[in-house]
Structure formats: C-alpha cells, structure tokens
Amino acid sequence: MQENFWHGKRVLVTGHTGFKGSWLSLWLKELGAQVTGLSLAPQTEPSLHRLLGASTDDTDILDIRDRDAVLAHVLRSRPEIVFHLAAQALVRAGYRDPLGTFEVNVRGTANLLDALRASEDVRAVVVVTTDKVYNNPENGLAFMESDPLGGHDPYSASKAAAEIVAASYRNSYFAGRNVGLATARAGNVIGGGDWAEDRLIPDAVRAWQAGAALHVRRPKAIRPWQHVLEPLGGYLGLARRLWEAPEGVEAFNFGPNHGEAASVGAVLRLAERHFGGKGAGVVLGDGSEGPHEAGYLVLDSSKARSELGYYPRWGLSETLRRTMEWYRAQREGADALSLCLADIRDFVGTASQSERERLAG
Image (tube, rainbow, N blue to C red; front, side, top):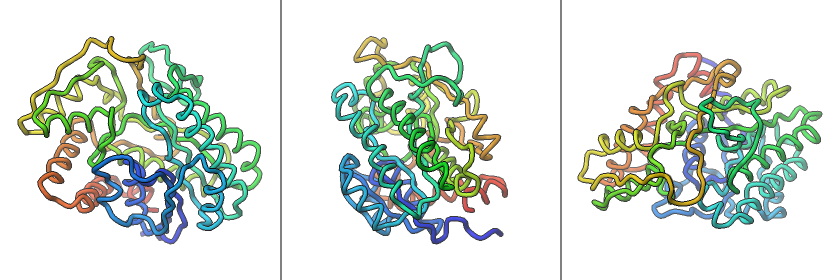
C-alpha cells in the first residue's frame, strides 16, 4: 500500500460552502489533508456545508472579489494545492446579473491566481470551470478540450473567460516555477445535499417532497449527467498529476461514459421512479420558456481517461438511485455526514486497485 499522497498536504478549497465544495472538502479530510476554505456563507437552506459540520481546518467567509482578503488568506494558510470552485454557477442567474457573474467568475479567478503568484508554497492549482465553456453549434458531437471556447450566455462566457485568465497566469507566472495549473470542465453533477435553485434534481426533490408537480422548461435538452463524486475524483487525480509532472497539463473534460448523456425528460423519469414517494409528477414545457440554453451538450473525456486514469463508475440509473435515496434518508432523519461518507466509501470501493491508489494516493 502506497503512503497516502494527501496526508498532511495543505489544501485550499475556494467555494467550500457550496455543494461540490462541501463534498470535496469532506473527501479531502477523509484522506488526511489539512483543508482550508474561503467562500461566501452558505447560499441555501438547508446547507450541506452546515450539515456536514467542520470539514475544514480553517475557514474564511469572504468574497472572492475582495483581492486583499483573498491574498491575506493565501499568505496565512500557505496552501500547497488549490481547488478553485468559488463561482456564480447558474445560467439563469447569469442572465439576471451579468456584471456580477463576470466579476465573480473572471475577476474572482484573477484575484485568486494573483494571490497565488505571491505564494512560495503552492505546487498545484485546479481551476474548475464548466462544460459550457465551448462554442456550441449543437451539431451532435461531443466536445474535446481542443475545441474553441465560446459562451452564448453571460455565465458560459464568464467561465470561458476564466479559462483564458488561467492560461495567461500559467504561461506568464507559473510555468517557470514548477507550479502546475490546469482547468477542469465537468458536466452536470447530481448527488445528495444540493439545494440550489434552478437545478433539476433539487427542484424535483423540493416539488415532490411537497406533493407538487415539477414544471420543466426544456425536457428535450441533453446534458452529460454524473454523480458529484465522479468529477471530484477526477480533480483529485488531476491535482496529483500537476504536483508530480506539471509540464504540458492544461485542460481536462470530466464527463460520464459515452452513451450516458441523457435528456432532461429521461433523467426525470428515472428520478421519479427512484424517488418512490407521492410526488405529483412532471409538467413538460416546449422549450420556449425563458432565455436561451443549449439543447445539446456532451463531453468527450477520453483525454482524462488516457492521461489521468479517469473512469466513471456509476451509470445514470445508479447515480439517480443513490441520489434519491440520500434525500429520502436525510429527510427521514439520517445524518448527512454518514450518508456522504457512505457514498464516498462505496465510490472508492468500486474502483480497481490502481484507481483506488490514484484516488487515495
């Protein structure tokens, strides 16, 4: 058994109070890392961050747009590995507040990277963007990392701009210092503990738990759905690769296996079946309601498979079964921390020996 790569590593997670950040911080703590976090206060009620308790050793509640506060945190916590998840992460919120979205996602990323430029300790930085960074002609093809960046809406454009900011800092400041910096582009994540607005599964759970029908704007839209642990496992592997061999590591897609992308309607049919309660069903729209959102978005993750050993393990049905069981158990009184730890252990347990070593170090 190899010594755990993560044990004792000083790791900073920005956005640690969010859905993905809460899961990632918990997983890192289980691996023995010294985790610090900087983020806004939790934006949902309930909040997975609050339900999990102390999953970081040091927390700063601050705005990523506050350059001086970000710099002060970096200089105090002296992170060796950084996962940048802090973001305005919703498409429709981007339409409502485009300037705020650009400030958080572009300026916030620049603030963090500029603070890390002053650090003598950092060795690896993973900037998490989105599958929506690509110029999307909706031609039925899966995006590869070499495809052009774009962004029809403010959220997507802000994340594409964050990719350019990250590349600029990598080329200008980090490449000559043996500091690895890469971006991670993940698909639509599903898992227990997400209570954000305007996300399919949280909206469905809220509606069905209340005995109400769920109104869906675009049931035919196709997305690369995956359990939240799938990309998080990819981020862990990417960070280790950056630590060990940073040269030439730039961007990676993390999506489900080929053929697992599915329409919103198909996801809801599976989710409703696994929900197992007395929800009032689904009301399907015709796609015309609200601002533009892409109708087809699929990722090609073959680069991550070949270079990082990334292999998604849970298919869509298994992902939805576990997610709905998580929400049901938590509503019935089960401890969120125990539910998350059980999922993490099951996820790692389904990996091959080589994959388990990659995930644990």
